[in-house]
Length: 236
Image (cartoon, rainbow, N blue to C red; front, side):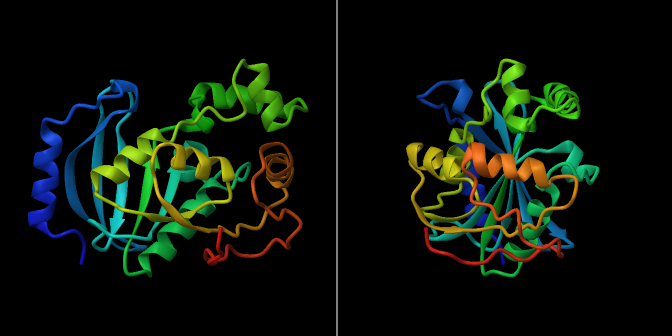
């Protein structure tokens, strides 16, 4: 069972006239909510309109998360090449599938899907960065050569989405300490971090090693290349 229809109606009503005090760049509004049975389990999908006029965002909700504590949450940034096409240059699709499968087996949980392609630099720039990587740059060097930081993402939108669903605290599925810090800075109470164990493949091993060494991601890129494992619990 997901969020009850009466509660969904209340959430939609309170979002109808919502305006953010912090300005449109960090403001999203819940505008639609529907059942979404999937191959990963019974989900509901919430559509969030970004009042800044950019991309809409989504939350895929399993079970009743309203006013709940310690809700398992994966915050996933869009990756068209990985999520949709199955690119082996990254581990994005494997992380998304592992998260949906694991959360679908829990009592409740959320996958927040943010439209922050290419760690926030956009699709075209991501492909430009791929060109540079093909010439010998690593993922950090490529972003910097294009005039960007290694990671341009802002998780204020995710914090806003969780607040709109009245989630009181979360258990975050991530290997990225910066994501944890940014969410906490935006007021999200995180009670636990759950690692995502995604073994590397020959095409993304160097990419993952760069994320580990230069970006501080908590990865073990030396592990054997085996099928994707479900997330495993671990305290922060």
